[in-house]
Length: 359
Image (cartoon, rainbow, N blue to C red; front, side):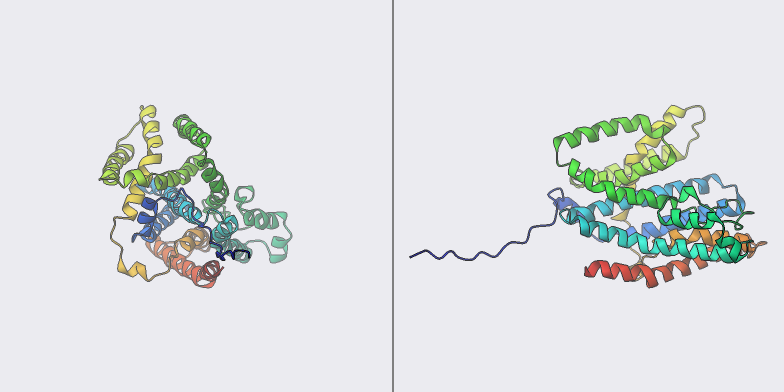
């Protein structure tokens, strides 16, 4: 008589990566104020672009606000998206679906809506506007995130400081590139060769970064967000994170307060070190700043603020709204941007976020 073999139900494989440590889970699951930081840096970018588009000349501090804010967004994205990927490393379809459903629907709408508004504002007639090759080239390349190939539309914003319809969209292609290469980076870290390559890249960065194009410099901050996430095991011990934060603050003060005219080597060295210090400050603050109660119940519309503020400033300048009162122009920029960002979240982003969770 054959012995009956007991049925063992199949086990569900753990989707989480072995690279996802307890320290990472501990920090990510804590209350944090990433939304507050996103709002803060999104509003800084609005102020920066308003100053550029309205006054053409920026105060030195405002001029620094734009690049710093872009770096901050890249760091936060690198940190949080890497954690999201590690939680579902064995399901690439789910990872890419979540990522693209977060950014693409609102992005497509802002490009198409900007096209329609510019057609209404253009000095060309509707027929002439639609029969120019530039308008369709603009729509096609911007939907593909190749914004630099055709940033402007005919007959609109020609008297403004910049003719671009939406100068903020240049960062989106780098966001998508990061989404694509992140799985390759993580898979590389599974091998010893990957760590050697990573070490070589770190050394090369010291020489390349100060002389690299601004877009490549900013891209390094995606990777620095990844690096901070993988450093949490080390930073979580004793008071290392706090000490690293204090040291980083000192480095940032040395970078932005003194004048380094005649000392380019010192300035370039500090800028390279900032790849480590700025992410350390940002992630430390995300888990140590108090969380405003009002933000807990509000939707996060910072993405919409980023997408809509630039064309809104352009339209205000083009139409001459509050031309004689810069303060009212500034207030109108923030109010209209807030309205459009909220509508974007309620009508577009939230719908796809819900679908993303259900799937």
